[in-house]
Amino acid sequence: MSIFSGIGEMTTDNKSAYLTAGEYAATIVAVRLVNSKKSSDDFFVVELTVTEARGENAQPVGTEAAWVCKMGGQHPESALRDINGFLRAVTGAADADIDAQFVEDVIKDDGLALVDMPVRVTVTEKPTKRGGVFSKHTFRAPLAAGEQVPF
Image 1 (cartoon, rainbow, N blue to C red):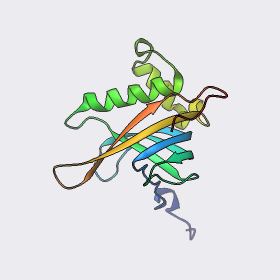
Image 2 (tube, rainbow, N blue to C red; image 1 turned 120 degrees about the vertical axis):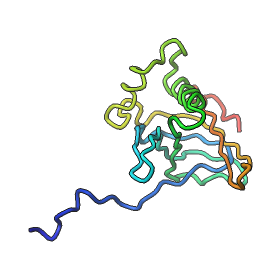
Image 3 (cartoon, rainbow, N blue to C red; image 1 turned 30 degrees about the vertical axis):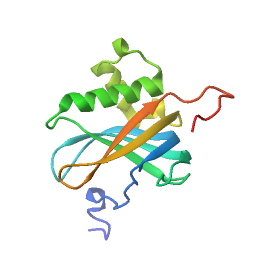
Image 4 (cartoon, rainbow, N blue to C red; image 1 turned 180 degrees about the horizontal axis):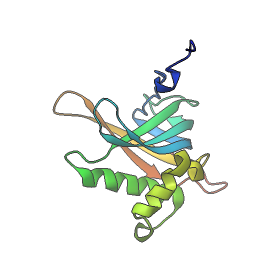
């Protein structure tokens, strides 16, 4: 038996940061569907690298961050609406073009088709009834060449 037996079942504890309130330009690193080993919940995850940031509490440029959207739960339509907005912003697709197969194609190979694509995102935060913080992510299309950053 090798000293490395069982390493395939291990994962690192490296966790991406979450985007805090602010305005961001970012590039996509990966897009995937992840199943939690702790809760068995499914999550739509977009990993990003921040290329521009504005806001008092915004994460700095270079931050590797993740947008994690829980699938199902009490409000499954909210997750689907948010994912639809992300996909429209990044791909330019119309609502009518985004269906289950479209999303499956996007997340194939960890979202390889979207890797290195630019996107803008605004994050707003509000307190929850339980004392936590809810972060709303609004994705927008990247800027056209020569267009000024609006923030």
